[in-house]
Length: 131
Image (tube, rainbow, N blue to C red; front, side, top):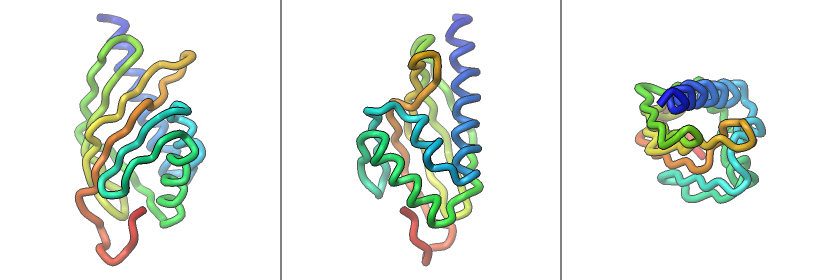
């Protein structure tokens, strides 16, 4: 039980670092937080398999000027001491939505995203592109 509590705290720290990297415009750091074989499913944008495809998605979003990402009401569930699932509402300067699932795993002592599923619920400025 204690090790699962530590896993929750460490995952929350890793998630906050990911958000900080995104808000700094560092798409490479964001992508490097995913395991090499990660799968990211986004609605309505599609499926992105592997770190390079995931990097291209985040780099495009950063290029569009996306910033000020925030997670609202995050929920974390420890599956075990090496796996945590996160869900939350999210918002940024160009849109908002819901993270259905981020699965974080401890790999070589580092918390990384194994799979990611989120949905765009609306654009802040409907005339602007989003991904």
